[in-house]
Length: 449
Image (cartoon, rainbow, N blue to C red; front, side, top):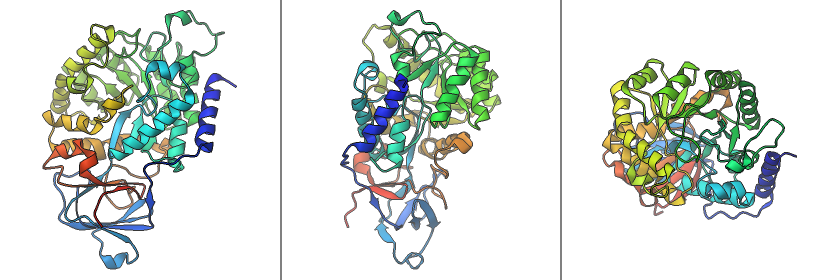
């Protein structure tokens, strides 16, 4: 068995056989009737008048229903509070939050899975009921969450980040070079964190392997990155032929490729290769922003600002200098998003920091320096839900997320206040999210009965 196979087997056995007692127990009921709630539907500019929402099973069955429509339902009186869709993070690394890169590569795989499971529960309790995982071995954790082994968000998994030699995601030490076709996979590849490829044929193979394991979309690193030790920001990595090989392989499965890219050159090369989604793009210019808009390409970006990312890397290090360059580009990027009306999804890109992960809601709120509360809420709900629909039949969940409408998934938050009037409410989910429901099950209920 390959190293990757051993990793996945160990993770599956661990999750299937361990005795797990979660501090968060779901309350499953057949029907739940939310009464006297003001609804933010994920799309609009204002809350509804006080109304009611009926949840039947894991779906929203009816909006504006009466008690007589569901006489046996569990009734929750919202007392005029806001009922809104669960939040969505479109750039999340499910397996890479509580581990350092060294621990991920050389530490115990059982510990890695348990820490990721604990972080998944914490993510859900911050009100993020869905995440798009953009790199890492999240398949086993997703299966465990879906099987109710432990609480966590819905996961749209990408599997391993696909990179090139020296590219972003290539964490191999120099001592592992050179490598030729006869050599075994590196540790980071064995553990499913990244796959290093240097030809169109190998790109196709690695893409198909992620799809075989259940990837709903594919992630390539098409330009340099901050965290990787051998990856300058200015470089463009994959050749057009390699990018096209990935796009063709994903398209054959009815899904899409997203690329990590910061610079105009990397972004333009990806768009010219029919990539559908650009991640980051903090260093692009006006002409490239216009090019994104003209080609109807999605931008999935993040508020990478000093408030959250200062001190992530040692002062004076190459990584710290690269992080500073990216942070300096954030304001200009969001200004161009508004200027060119680019379709923009919200994500956070938290890596290797449990403390930063706790600020997930605050990172969403930080967008208020560029966007209105309604625009912010749309990004993290219905807009992100539209992005997830790009996975087509590869979507692991057959229903709508990010909206409150009939037949959408019942992923809901009851907020103590009006986030359209006070977006800061989202920065303190422990206090302000009184009830959290995912898939029709209540995971948090702080209402006084």
